[in-house]
Image (tube, rainbow, N blue to C red; front, side, top):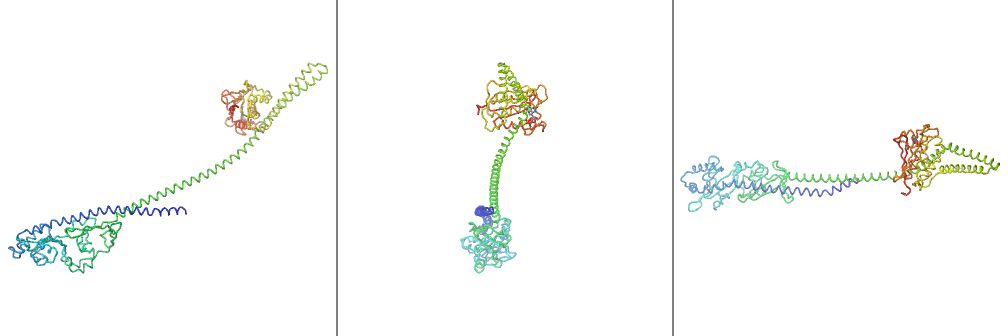
Length: 578
Ligand code: ADP
């Protein structure tokens, strides 16, 4: 609906533009056509006048002929018959249709075509060319005396005796049809009209002897009637002459030889008393205007389509952006929700992992606590006996031993409590050396049980890192337990632990066990190669460690050592860098 309205609006706006283009092209082509038409018309007129030129001279030349001058006074030395033969010869040579010798009163005395249909005896006194000749000028005139006669153009001049008096005249008749033959094939339609508007010369047969003017007035005018055979005159076929863009346009449909629409031009030819006319076909002009208008219209349509396409693309893009923005926002919300879920799940897992580790250690721990307890009991019993026997020195030594054993038990229990506590505080400064020490203490029982030799290169000074003590302890304990598990049943089990600094702080735990089966999978939750169900393999230890180290801004990687066994490297941020 909206698009249709826009298209209509554009069409309404484009209409005057297209009309302007059409008008401009039409006018331009019309101007060119007019220039060409003027050229053709003046060429045709010049041709006609120059064709007449040689005949104009003929009566003048003949009027000097003494025989003719003599004959005109009606008592010639030679017979009129001989003079007619002479004139016939001249006509043959010059191509004139007829040559007449007239006396002073206009009666034909001799004629070139004396043999058939001759004018001998016919009086031409009233004819304008004769009248002009008798006044001493060169007279010219056009006429068709009889219906079957060819259309003729006459040039008449006076004959004078030596004293200069006019004695008669010589008249040359030119055959117009013979002249027309030369320009029948011209593409433009050219015709010549006389003062009455009668088309007397034309390069199209159908136009000849039509009255291009007031037919009725001409037919009722007695004085002009002698020039043509009235019955042969015809009205012009129906046409409309209008003015288009300052040019005269001819529209007709009555004659197949004439274009339907033409440009009409005319030029006066006073030398022969006629007007030259030309009709030029307007179809090429119209075609050119149409073509240009169509081109501009096509261009406008293309422009319109292009703009519409552009707009549509912009709209689609905007819609897509909107959708993307919406889905991004939704995604962000979902990610935030999921992150929160995962975080709480992770917290739970950390705790679960710790408890699992505790469970794993509990046997060792109870053993570790039982041993000093048993020792304390026997030391205490001994001390009682020694006190009864008043052996104070030895009793005091026993009590010292009891005190140190109780201290050791207290340390173990403190460690356990700290480990099992849920640590939620943010990361702080932690001494990594102490973390390793505490962990070794926790794991000590199990390590000894499994005959694992630990190589711990303890740095001389504390190494402070960004992290949480208990959580880091959990990570290290997990690495040590995994190594111990991996080397289960293997003689010569060893673990190397060291701390190094290189911008970041690195804690490395290496063993000489079988190495990692699939190092790409170890950090995946629930990935385990340990028998499930036996209580030891949950596949959570490393994934929890991974999360813990990351939450301190650190990294943990595990790979196989070229010298055998697995090596885990934890990268941590030094405390002073935070
Ligand atoms: P779990 O110990 O419950 O199997 P972990 O995530 O701690 O889960 O370990 C995943 C797996 O990584 C172990 O099952 C084991 O296959 C492998 N792994 C971990 N540490 C070592 C090691 N030091 N040597 C060989 N394999 C190890």
